[in-house]
Image (cartoon, rainbow, N blue to C red; front, side, top):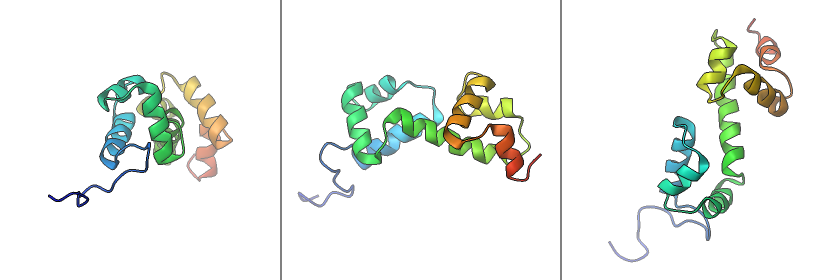
Length: 120
């Protein structure tokens, strides 16, 4: 391979490489690792990882993870899955925590949102 002909696009200065970003996002979605642990997997300190992640996505890792969990919750809420199951499947420790986070970000509780989508 010649210089400047790598297959991966070069990251923006201060950003994660595309491969590291994908790895971090997969870990945030599919594991219970903390942001500090994910930063360690990427061989970065938590603060460096958080800054680089924000350069890539415009969001902190915590905010990105929460929004991704809410999108997953919306997909599950349009099924017949119990709200308790949805909350646990999306990584929340209990339904009350899930309901508070969902209400804050979506603007209404999960049950009301589900009913508004036409699912009783």
